[in-house]
Length: 230
Image (cartoon, rainbow, N blue to C red; front, side, top):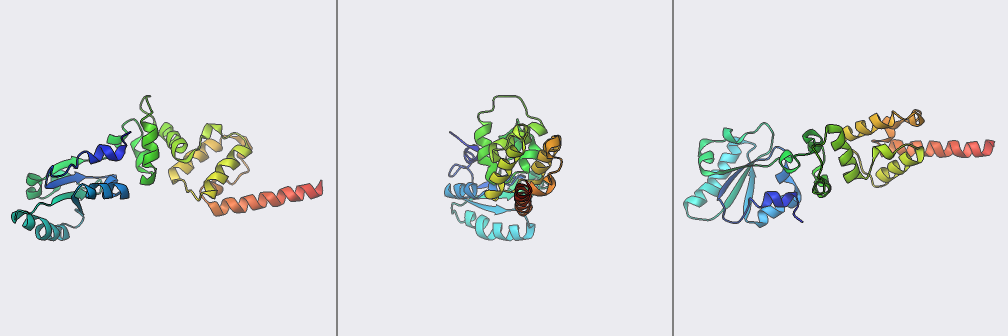
C-alpha cells in the first residue's frame, strides 16, 4: 500500500529534471526517510536559506558543472511558509521545475493546523488511518480526537473513571511519550468536564512524567495510610 512518501517521491524520477524548485512549508522533505529516498533517486538537496551562500554553492557546484555537460540533478528547497517560489531569482525560475508539497495536500480531510503541530514521526500512523477514512472533512476537535486515537491510542470519550485515566497515564509516561501542548489542552478540556477528576492535578500530570510519578507516589502513600487507619 502506497504511503505519504510515495505520493511525493513519484515526482523525483531519475533524470526528470536537472533543477527542481520545491516549496516545502511543512518540512516534509526534512524527514529522514524522505531525504534518504530522494537522494537514492540521484538528487542532491540544498536549502534556499541564505541567498548569498546558496548562490555560491549553486554556481560553483552545479551550474558550472552543467555547463561542462555533467549530469547532476538538484532540488532547491524553500522550507518556511514565508518563502514563496515566485520570489526566487529569475534564472532559477526559468530553468527549474516548480513543485509544492504540504500536509493539507496529503490529508485534505484533516484540520491543517492540528496536523502541522504533530512531530513528523507520527505521519505514518496518521497516513495509515487516513487511508481508511471514508467520511467527511473533520473539524479541529475531530482531528484532535483522530490523532489521539491513531498516534497515541487515547480515546477521550472512553476516559470516565479513575482507572481509565490511570491506564492512559501509565501507558504514556512508561513509554516516555510527551503529548503536544495542543493535545494536552484538548484532553484537559474533556477531562475537566468529569467531576470525578476535579481533585486530580491534571494540568501537571498529563504533560509531565515527573509530576505523574510524584502524584502516583503520593496516592500510594495515602492508600497505605488509609489501610493502616482502617
